[in-house]
Image 1 (cartoon, rainbow, N blue to C red):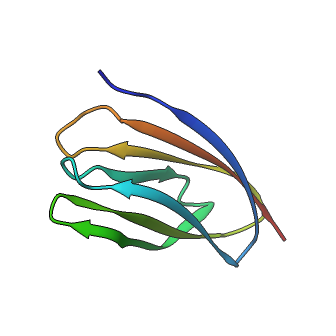
Image 2 (spheres, helix red, strand yellow):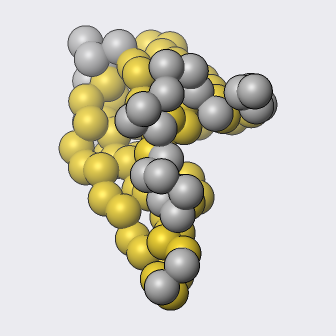
Length: 102
């Protein structure tokens, strides 16, 4: 059974200035990864880095840092889904409403 849990967060950033979204990621049980979906004409992904905070023989968890930049002033949405490579549905979902200002 899939556990869908949606959270909505609001972010305001200036056009042309990078902003980061940090999410906790636990890769222990089969490689679950956060996958963003967004309008590529409004936002550009500058970086996607995983920083391991715990790496013991049986666990691999840490922070995933996504860095975006808004191309122009306006509203946009970034939807993150926690996905396993072998599963068609998302385990968890987070939604970010992004306001880009001049």
